[in-house]
Length: 397
Image (cartoon, rainbow, N blue to C red):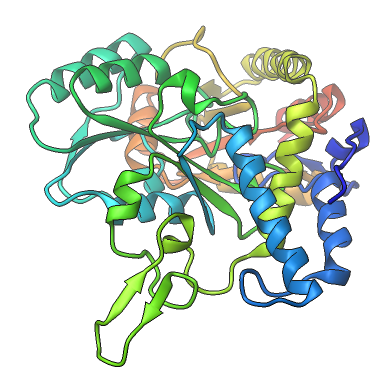
């Protein structure tokens, strides 16, 4: 099998003609993902299901994609990489795989994907600082017995603030608990290593990471996943099926939770992006993003009636996501005006994080704002001119 040679063009964003600043919802596809799909289409076929050339090629590419994701995420030897539809799917899979009686500890500042799936959940108030997050987790975990999972976001989809994952992992492990990280918003902006940050599980979505819709990953420790009932019962998840109902021997490893024909093109396109990012100068990409973030935040402070919201304070570490309240204005109306009159795409609403948005609007003195917040988010392909365009348009609106 040939090894791809990556160039700067691999991370070039496909599409032009408008200013897209809604990356936190869906990041645009990059050239590496599109090229990987186009290269595979002429020979693509069933995965793990045949001996013909199409099936053999597809199976090799699918398993190669799994290896690429394991490397990209810095997994331990023996960790599993299970392909899912998206982060929500991945976290629901993990919730279904928890040992009986597991207590889940979660902050109420999470995206609904990491707030709603968990049985027997202990919900903590969203902290006002990274230190408070660590202290609150420590206090909660010390009183729990049996299997325990602490599940947290890597970076907020509302404020962009980066959570103290390594410190939370240390606290969790000190109390015999495990930690899962919703990396949907962190992975596109910051390199992640499961081994280095001490995470037991990481979940992410392809459509946040410059790949098409429909692909996601749950990566992490194998024991809970191997002991759980299959997430989707069917072909692929079953190793042998007898003549009587219930006479089934289930597969082990990732296949156990990948029932049905897998999303080969999604897996391959996601792996292509991860491979290109792994070879890029991510420090330079991060520095450029921080320059744009400073430009955006400084410009927003000059727009009357605009107030940036934050959990951890003005100087906390962030990725390229900023949300604001708009005094006396409906964020949805403003977002529509930006799109219709200026060709600028942003997001308005509560971003599937209703408890957090309610708190942030209240703290900003806008508790009655039923429309939620206006969110600006960006990444690869965003330029200083894009930020200037938004600021000028927002000022006029």
